[in-house]
Amino acid sequence: MKMWVKKMKIKDFAEKLELKVLTAYDDSKEIKGCYCGDLLSWVMSRAKEGDAWLTVMGNVNAVAVAVLTECACIVLTENASLDEQAKQKAEMQGVCFLQSSENAYELAVKISELI
Amino acid sequence: MADSIRLHYDVSGTDFTLAGAASSDVKRTLKQLGISPDAIRNVAIAMYEGEINMVIHAGGGEIDVEITENDIRMVLEDHGPGIENVELAMKEGYSTAPDNIRSLGFGAGMGLPNIKKYTDDFRIETQLGVGTKLILKVNI
Image (cartoon, rainbow over the protein chains, first blue to last red):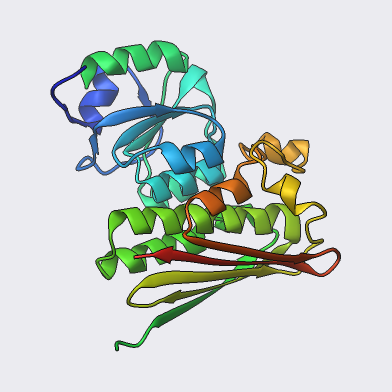
């Protein structure tokens, strides 16, 4: 069990994991944990504030869930795409979308080494 | 005793981009009032699920929220098709959402069960062809 909690700024997180930044973002947000899932109801009730949320859902509804759960950012895995409408809404609501070519498992393993 | 705060929202039945707007607004208000994070989380989850249900199944609806000293009360009412089998609808994993909705990340059959799980008081009134009304309460 980890005896410490590390936090990480989005900029460092994106650089270390070689993630593509898809939206403008507020770098005061800190990543404190990670949650993986694509079913929005499931994520809505389980993701925590400050989580990096790994998903393939790049739509407006994912933005709403990110706002409500206050997760730090959404990482679209396996190069899942962000639709234009979602991009606009995300920037309006201050939700940061990142993108990775890796799958949720591969990325989560790396995240666990970082935070 | 302090007056309660009342909020009203019309939920669009066609615009998916607006789903979650009412829940976000209530969440913001509750934060400003200094309500505990746990209660806020419970309200946000219940309301978001309710909003999504209205958009997916009922062509929209209305939400009234009342914040009192002791609790947050929500009434979510739609004039959709009603729920044929409430017992089934309350079961986790049961969903009547069509495939196009599932591809958006919904239809997990978690909506009503989540609403019940995260509220302290849950009542459902539904009539086929008339609509569905949820009366919810989250203690502060």
